[in-house]
Image (cartoon, rainbow, N blue to C red; front, top):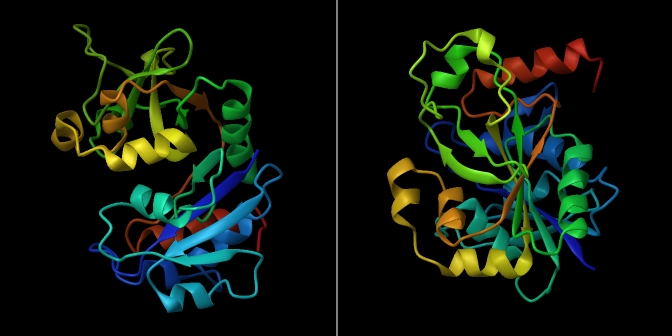
Length: 250
């Protein structure tokens, strides 16, 4: 069984240009992501999928293969698919290139889940909501679960709807989690996903995972307690540096 982790990273981002090269406590964002991913015990290979030589140069001394992908590809998932073309992997883990605090344990959890259940198409992560404010924010994606911890629906809206006033006392909820955008794909499904046009649901919510739901995918959601702090805007760098300092990491 071939298990590949792919980190898609592009230089030009609307909200934060040159983000992968931004320094966080002396190291570039993309280097931090790659270094942490390489600690995985379950991946056979790690690939950086990028359109930039400058990004590739940041990891040239690490045990990471670099694949240059078309800058016109519409999404990170398409870059992941392009990066593994011809390799015929069994499992592909899409590791976000803007998650400098990614823990290798959660990567390995995704691989293990796909190994354990051959009928799963996709595996992802979720966390408990703690406060009403984060539940109600459209910036936090909600995933509704069935009794098998599989996704029923993803939304930016605060679902499930409740006629009663929602207070902090309702969390944690057994049926809704905050979605964490790390994905493990069965490769056959990844290929199908990238060959399928954008779905109506995906377009309406601007959530790529709804294309998978429209295709009838079985999506396992693993609950995690690990801390995540992605870098979307320059202000997020200070948050990451604060965590690194607090936890005495390098």
